[in-house]
Image (cartoon, rainbow over all chains, first blue to last red; front, side, top):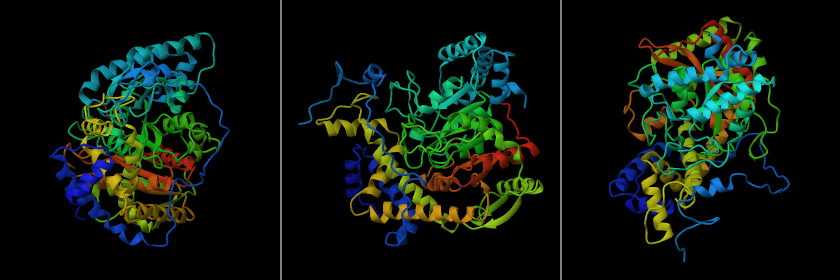
Length: 94
Length: 482
């Protein structure tokens, strides 16, 4: 399957990945080669087959929502590249 | 094998007071010091922390306390499993400096059984790869031939066990990442049924496929480790509530009357001839012990690679969206907006294979392609699962090669698709959620291990271990002494 440079750039944007000038054409050709192999799935898109999502014998489980104090709070915050007191500091969003 | 070389042997000796946990550990640390510079299996050895754990076990014994099933057993962990206070790198630069604020559930269980956690082992970045060449830090060598890969992505754990640096290790298996390196390194590697072992604290790659599993030198040790780490965890919503069997009890059963299926699709044209011969000989050994062998068909195996390499990257593209450089890891790179600095951080922090898979998964889930790729791959997954249901209505276990050939050389598979095809025999078990084990089938003429893969229906690890133990009794596994 041919992937255009525009599709590569759109996908990289959606994936929040800044690609270098060397990476973009490399991934363009490699993704095309991998998707060529996936052509064998083509017939299945419209086929009336039950999809096999998740693992067998498991269903969504619900339990009482009982809050528990997390013991590693300070350790967790210590990982922040930038913090202010008990908050993660990020640059302005708006 | 002498008791001090196996997990079961060490635990028995430590409990009986014939050796201390600290003595066991010091001998292992000396071995690691001597050999790991050649093999590079560990990303980090936590000597002092491990000595503290070993002393605590010895103190508890001296007080007459009852010790756990892994008393004093040195265990290595793949570096995508969180240990409180230790760095978790996932073999990636993007997590630089991250220290886990909690223990994974499997780590809590190992501690509860008095194991001694030694350190973190090398892996393909975020467990994406089949050779451990995708680690951002360094390559791990195969102990049987240092010019070859140990397999992956749990290559560090497999090589550490094969070289007898530790008697047991944990890996994670999303498409074969425990079994394939076990096969390449001549170790026992087990992928449990999806839901048998808690994934809480395992860094997520593809959540519907990931399972933690043990790597050991003997089948008995695989059973011991699985008994220790298996079982329901209320903190993992996909954890099975069913009680865990005593897998050690399954080992003595023998294979008389066991029905073994050989799937024709796994012995296809073009596979390595020596691999096929060794695998068929191993099956023959089980047949001579009273198992019956029949040929079966898993007709939708041809969709496996395509299905897996759509589904796993799709799930990965979503799971890895959390690495934005804001809450942990490498500090955010500069950019005009939050989104731009996030994209710059991710572009610089992830390696090529991880970026390739995020791109592939994002593409498969994107508007206009979702149905043709992700939807079709899910349907293929359903067909593959039904193949196994049909097969297990006729036979108890399936026997296949673990990989199409023995360990390959560094840089031999540089094209992504060539690397992906090396997983062809292992990914179906993850797609179907069933358990599978790789056990040593023998050595090639060049002295490289070949793995026999056994697969069973969900929660029938007992059958896998029983058949594996029968093979091991007749054909003791070759050990490598690098």
